[in-house]
Length: 272
Image (cartoon, rainbow, N blue to C red; front, side, top):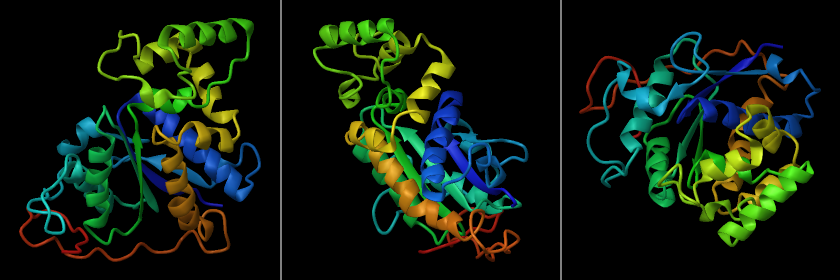
């Protein structure tokens, strides 16, 4: 079994742990993969050889054609052009991934961020599946959705936070505020208080709870929508590849020409 590549574009190193972990939960559930065998079927990659992901802040550094003009006759919404650059970078990658996952923090602009990513996904007939996610207001809220107190201290800490905030931050994480790391409603502050800032404890928040709990607690923070994207788009993309009967040596689709009006320098698909 050859591992098929899944491109990953995220905000930072913490997201590069959380997002693949959540994706793997869905894949493991969908394909009933034995423990420890998932790594043989999929791997995560960035645009550069050897990289496991791409950070949004570095997308503009890649030498791919810049996207100009409107999207489907409409002005570009925030993130649309940056997302297209990322996708074009993966088009030029050799070998290409079978799918690309784009995940952003909403920073309070969930609908706008989602629309911008959707514009990029619809901008071309990409030669891979594109999966979108918007964490509202940020990644830490997705982790909080899976937090279940495991000790007396954790139970007490959650009770204190519920009293301080006036609501349960694990059930209503979308009501937290990403504007300041030290603010009372900061998702980062709340998560640190519950997990002690330990990566291993954080990871248990997406590896241990049932997917049904993650979906329920993630209805308003973007997590449920992201898990559905993975289930509806990535699972079928891999079903006949890494986990199925189809040959993993299947050739990549041909690269269409550069979009008219864009800068030249790489071959990219075009719907316009």
